[in-house]
Image 1 (cartoon, rainbow, N blue to C red):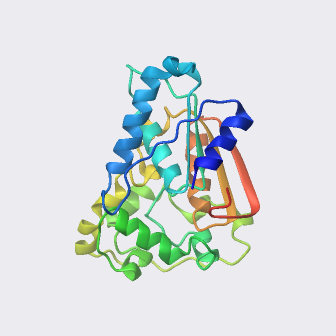
Image 2: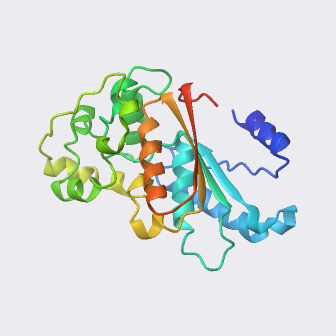
Image 3: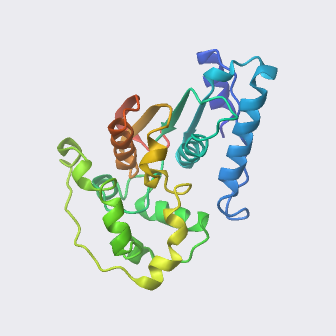
Length: 250
């Protein structure tokens, strides 16, 4: 699916492009995909010159779940002193958090192909190999009170500007958390799965970033919230928003 796209990027940017064929879920459960991408990135950072590449100019890139993996790999490398620093990261409509699945973009685009809201949740739960009721996740019953207090400074519709709420958005009522569901959902709050939930000390060290969001995409607001977090820490962000774009548009 990506061979042609990668060749296009390679040709148009005059770059060396390396595509990681990571193992897939559910046969290979989380976090095998992240481990494969991290291993490949570290190997290339160490051997870049063997491929005629300047180690100081390496950019990592991914779209959709690949954007999640890109963000997670960039975070995993911030404290590595034995490797060249990444030049930049490119996140194309990434999935970045599972705290609030009723952000404006989730409400506005829940029935927009190809990534319907329900499909997003089903795939996400298969990825972390969890058997949870979608209705409870949508209500937010999987988020404990402690986590709600911690994450509200990073994940909130309050940080989405008004222009993105004009297509219809209604604040959702707060439902009490379920202790049992919170315990089962624990892996979903790992920053490897939800990079938007990484600590400030990690976010502050990330490389220059390009983020692409699409108006007709449930994941639009994940990108907007990550953009805000990065900029709050002084990270340079180039943002491209496709007003008529949808998930998978690349």
